[in-house]
Length: 318
Image (cartoon, rainbow, N blue to C red; front, side):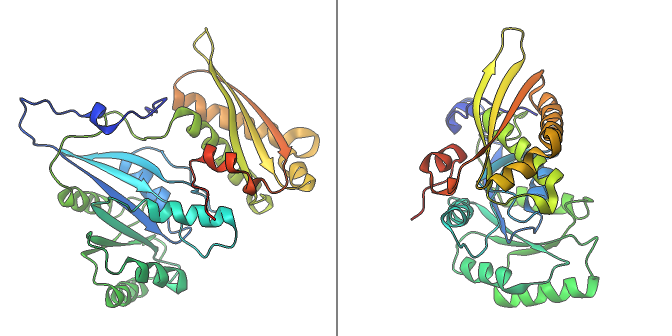
């Protein structure tokens, strides 16, 4: 995985030179949907490797993240957005704002729907909000490997009755069913133009941000239902050592001492396991040895701290 330390402006990435005819295509695909629809799994599958963290927990994705995929002469800039839901607090509102912000400037919008979960009010509210958009909107019914086939067709018919989609796709991001056809359709819809990123770059995330996401994923995967939703991972220090390895210090913020105890585990066993697995994955992603140090801090109402939003790349929403 090629993860840049910083993302330069798109013009600095261009693969096109003035004496070359423009044969390339490039464009922005906004991937939106309700929580747990499988958006991040889909983006990872289209890119061909992991760029977004995935867990069974709703609202895993918190900020806009771009995955970069290639299909023939087309570069697809896939914006993985947080799940759109009814916000109840400032942090929720910031995530929903990031989701809708991810659709700005899109050439295509892909609405991902959990094919086995039914439509429900969350999906229909998103469909209503998409009405009047000028971009082509694709309906993507995901998890077809788990869904009841007659119900899938009924979902597609009902949703197209609410909003006539440009195209409808039945896929499984997990197994790959229907993905090649969907990827080719996205590529056909994108405009001519030079690629914005080198061919081997798969994400616009910085290494610092990637490190925080990897640790947060381990929190989700290892703590399951025990995980305090009100937690966040901050990368405090990210330093390259002279021996070529990288030293990373991270702080896990929780709201209450009881939550800190859950993350630490008995005798610190849980935090050591979280650190070990995150370190192993970061060693592969960053392609060098990683020294990872985790600290759990109780910070009541951390979601009212502007600096946390800034570090996460979220806007402060009143």
